[in-house]
Length: 329
Image 1 (tube, one colour):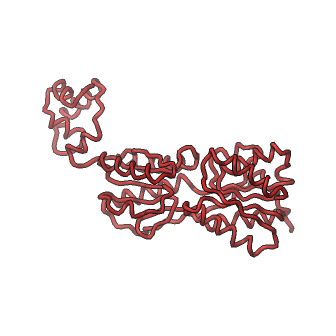
Image 2 (tube, one colour):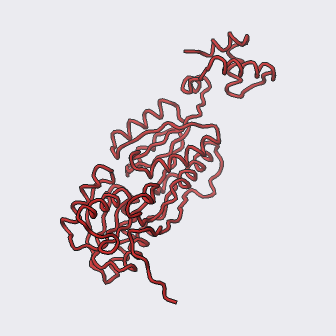
Image 3 (cartoon, one colour):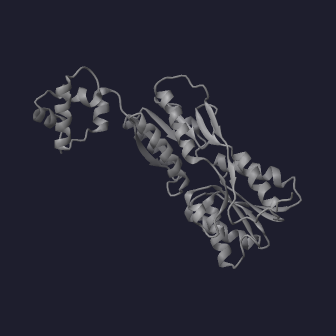
């Protein structure tokens, strides 16, 4: 493996000069800088980011902790973050907690050991005290926090929208899928839907679930039709669960949207390619990630935060799992 000493020897300069070129610190003559950069390219030298951070006491690494990278919503968040931090010269270390407190703790230790200068977390843990001893700034994403800067979508409004739209389109026996109690965004959207359904003339049922994971979605879908076979409208906890509901409805030969309407939540890219294409509540995932990264950059640079809590709007995306509303005019 090529080392910084190999680069220095080949370029005919000191290790300190190569370090100054790599870190853009101190004065280096232009012809020397060019010679060092050409040598780096020639030898295909890749500096060790952790070693550099130990040497300079400053890294360019940011930790990102997600709850479930198999859910396409979270890579959208990550892409927004990565694009923004990369434009500032930083790189990401990614962790996947699987909604497990033990894994979350392990990744916090990993980020600390790798000298990250900041962290964005979108995990489901409600134990925000885990983050109190950290020496670097933390931004919460896809959930609100009174203590930390945070970026999140208006889940309560999203839940209301889903209920209003499914009622408007004629569903009378609605099943509301309640996400895990420890996932704050899921509870916010549930409460939003509940506030509308409880004031409506529609009959409604609540299906309790303890996971938003892909592997469990089919189980919830089967359970719905076993417990509530007469349901004619389903508000899913996310698009993954909604897709599983559509799959089960197809297996049971239910006609969507004539016999059964389904509304998801998130608007993951795959939603438009499901059959029928899924009507859903859109969270602006990429923009949420970008905004979280912007907040973290300000924290790292010790710039004042004009807005510590950033709430982004949600919208109803009408596709083919809901009936069209007749326009009167």
